[in-house]
Length: 218
Picture 1 (cartoon, rainbow, N blue to C red):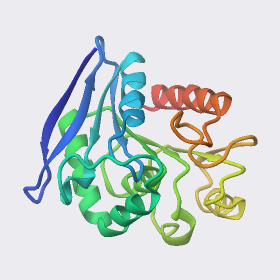
Picture 2: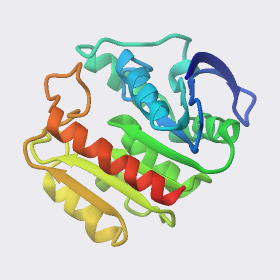
Picture 3: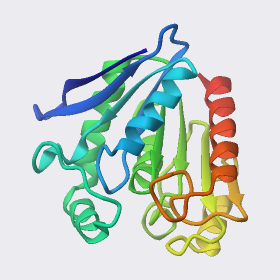
Picture 4: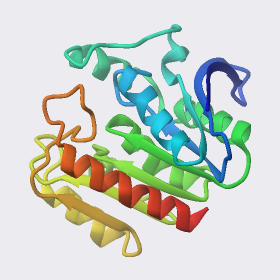
């Protein structure tokens, strides 16, 4: 397994950093999309977990649109929301697309929190083979009009303070072919061991389901 920071170039000429992990014997590729906090130690650990399962992984630093090396602490929610609100979806898609092009064919996209929302958009607008969205907010509010024609899986915590179950039901009703998993004992950010809502059992089950899903669809 080889871990390094690389440079990507988006289609508008913007250069950005990306965290890259190459598997020893790759069976496919995954683009990982960050939370509102940047390419944190947690996101890097997620990339490394996927690489140990046989995937080359790239996580584009989409906040490089503002300045390099923006990584926030998990208490800096207001700052993270500020960056999220400032970054236009089209620019984020351009940067995510650069990561997909770098990796090539047989590529999945997996995103967490803010990245979960961007994964939903990327599944509609970019050339991925499948997508997995973890607790992506605002999907039901703003993005149910998007057509998704690739396999997609969603993970939500039933106790998520930011994503009510009525929103999850709207996603289920709109995307009949989607796989939607709800974790009864989990809240928002249940996959992240650096957050108060970390729930190990749910995180492990979600990862197992994610790997099975990606393996089937790549």
